[in-house]
Amino acid sequence: MILKLKKLSKKINEQILIKNFTFEFKESGFYIILGESGCGKTTLLNILSLIDTNYEGLYLINDNDAFRYKEVEKCSLRSNKFSYIFQNFNLFDDDTVFNNIMLMLDSISELTNDFKINKVTEVIKLLDLEKIRNEYVRNLSGGEKQRVAIGRAIITSPEVIFCDEPTGSLDTINTENIFNILRNISLNTTVICVTHDKENAIKYADTILEFKNKEIKVIKNQPKKKKEKLKLMNLLSKKKTSTLRFKYIFNYFYSKLKIRKVRNVIKSIFLSISLISTGLSLGLST
Image (cartoon, rainbow, N blue to C red; front, side):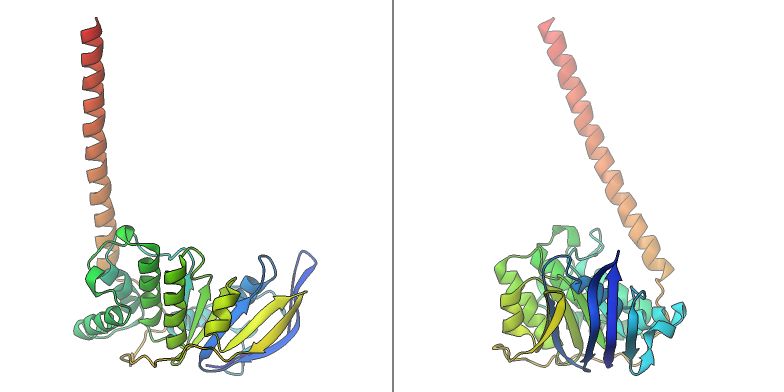
């Protein structure tokens, strides 16, 4: 998928963030958008991912004007062609690593259950999540959660992956690990990433778009890290729009109910112990 911007401009409250920007994102590669907070880098990402359609100029997706897409067409693109990785993970904390990744595959494909299990297992192995595949997400570290989020993003075989500060809350080791994974993914897919991390941008990106003095400077880069092409099973068929199975929704809410029930029981026990202790203390003092 090729994304083209032609004389794109964007302003918010009369403040110009992007002015007459022309650029083309190829079918694969690691693109990093750099800049200080409030400069417009996330705004550019939102335009590319069809979240923000209030701009001037042209945005073409495979030579089709994105501004003319109907909402149902945007939903289809988001489900079938795009994937997202966020800073705050956006995972289901009260479900397992395996189910969090399987959820995305369930929602967009009509493949056999055996194929889906094999596909999820393949991604889990690729991201070194085998030891925690049945662990609840709430028990994971930040780096582990972000790898699960990446697994959820690549499981659907997207053509473009958008990343919004994917390493913003991670330590140095996990940050390097995530950038390395994204770089390897970019050999198969277009990866467009917003970050503050200039050091790792230079180290891993193919192209850097840097917001500076209200202009976007394009830097063709020669990263030091080599790519290793990811060998993943392709999805042969996808739904036009994504939907969640009723079984998954029921199981999720049932698990939440069980967790809350257990928590309420524990709270009641501690409250009872506290009241009994208070009563005994008052009785003894009397």
